Image 1 (cartoon, helix red, strand yellow):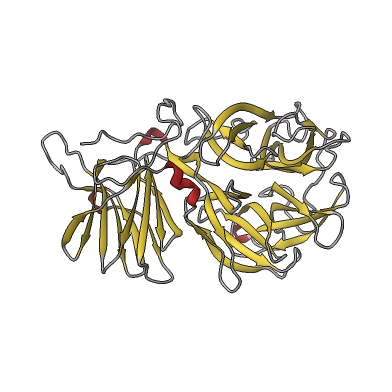
Image 2 (image 1 turned 45 degrees about the vertical axis):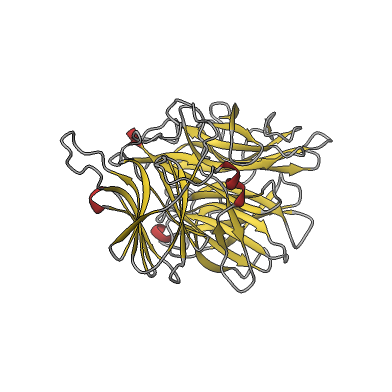
Length: 460
């Protein structure tokens, strides 16, 4: 249901689908700690495979730093592998653009550039670098190149105006104050190995960092751009009729906590988004947020005349059990709303003398357009304002992870490590009733390491 490599945290990633339907994720990986040094701790890509985008099996490390002194000798960050007709070897294979870090500026800012590797294979392994230097670097005419620079997270697609290629990159617009300079840079190439850098494709002027850009060709020939927003820790969506625009911004597609999205075709043929979700160090509500895990897919819906949205993906249903009104630590439940409603998912265990016993420890509340999640003593863990009042809420809990869908649309996510599993109780107008839920079957229920799904406190 969620995935991180054994004992480690997962950060930005890329998804592949092989001819036999096997999915591969390549991902940044590092220790599970709040004091995270991304120059010393993100030095390799982990690899895992799946048949369904839900149950992932770790397959070890697939790529690492370059030799000392090279552009990628200090760290390797976000990557984009994709099918390439000859892979540089005369047969079917892949090309991969990736971020290399050579060191730090005098003020401690990472020096970033983009490199290229090829593979004869299509399973995310067997990479060999193209040369010893980067293939694309920031152009100082448009982008910061030293202190507070950005030149990472490349994503490459076929150009819709030529036979060549287009690359988008997370960058810093040199014409804007650094606090609002996050932009998506543009570069073009005829052969993947020689690139021309252009002015920004998108420069909103109101974000500090616009990370992990993704380009997706839509069914009508237009384009979708996803960009992760540093301040909100969510991601926004833009659409355009052509790659070079004009681009229309639609605002947040994923709520705070959902980050670094990728788009891929699911086994059922639908288009889905997979994203990361954080954890807290020490598995407590007081722990610092840290890099986390891969969350389950969401259906990507793009319709003419409306903003893109993420909805519940039916592929998860295969992992749900029969309805029950018993307490369960991992579950999905649907609630029809009527006035101000509170859904109690977990209760407190008390202090040994019964204090707080049975009181709510995790609840979801909704009143018209206002939606929120609270922890012990009513502390707000997350909240949002819906565009329209919802008729039905779907709530998912997997360990500490909580997702809320309003009329099928993914709108809120948070973390809560408090309480014990309880029968779900809905309180409306002072009247309480128990509702049935569907238990979630975990792909690896017996896994026992730092990245396993948090089991929660004992049921009772």
